[in-house]
Image (cartoon, one colour):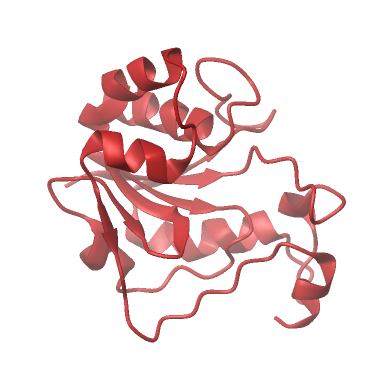
Length: 170
């Protein structure tokens, strides 16, 4: 199975106060570099979504995580990938068990961390349709429409960097 990794990085970073994707971790690397390094062992290629230097949101800018996911799904579909594993640019850890936990016939997200997900490439046309309508633009709303699953992993804690002080705890 060919899997594309996608880092969803198009958010406004309003709680962080500046572009958190390029915020430096204590080791001097950016949050986005950590997210890419954590995802890379599980996929054949990694793309950044929602940024000037990556895949632009689809169908238009500022669509939030679903715009980035839509870009990744179309890229996957057009380039022979079976699906997309996603993470957020503010998620510096991607546990080794995630692909086995998430990948399946249907879409899936990690309960409590919806940016970590599995999305079959065949969902690209349905997400186009979903984004063309007035509806719930949340990942959970899209997951429901796609007939996906929310998976709970007992005892799993993943750091999510939302404020500058969160970096100090890494």
